[in-house]
Image 1: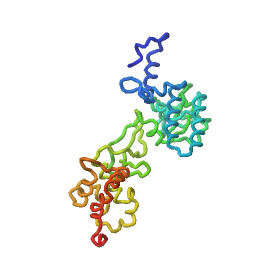
Image 2: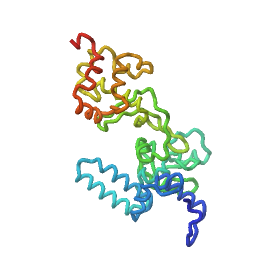
Image 3: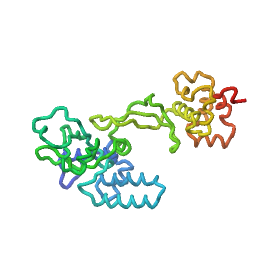
Image 4: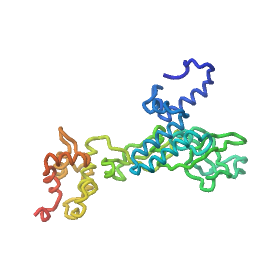
Length: 313
């Protein structure tokens, strides 16, 4: 799509146009070809700036999972009021993903910078060091990450309108600027009973400076690996809690199923082949429930094969 040929009554300068387009991509309102995304179309319905619209949509998505409806409505109401009225303060990570800054240690600085009594930060889209003024409400806590509204220049760039954010928020709500490593073998992949899904750990980095963030769990895409991790969780009692009390009677540790050469073992192969067939993949409790509704003895012999002979008797 692009905006270079748009018939503006008064065309803006090209740098400003490029900055606006980059901002919309960061907010996931535009896709790689410059077309509006489904999220961008929804954002356009609100009489707000793109940043505030993005923030409002994120809160709406979060509140869908809140069981306390009174609280959800209250938070949503405050968010609408905040998004509609705020201009220079309290920005949030969702709408200001390209205005994140990370606290840095002073390694070397010019003579002038050494005299500045302010915390130094590296801004996501700015090359030079920026400063959090000592009069800022968050200067004493000096959070590792913050978002800011703007960078007014005096003698040096000072952060204005700063709000602290947690590092895991960047992965959740500013994913467009994150990169992820390949799945890690350590820590082990895991099953989340609340979501009923298996995850692997990855190392995320954020922005062009590749700031490393804490480990993050992402859904496993590969069918075989998904089944292997679910089988591990099943035997370990995370997916099937009734097995926790009898785990000591198992002939092998459930973790042994995660080894690359484990599929050659009979008990491992039997269980994995039953969980993954041409007709069905059992990789979560929802699919296990479907299988048991059809056949209550499904997986009985395969799980029993993991226990010592004395326990089976």
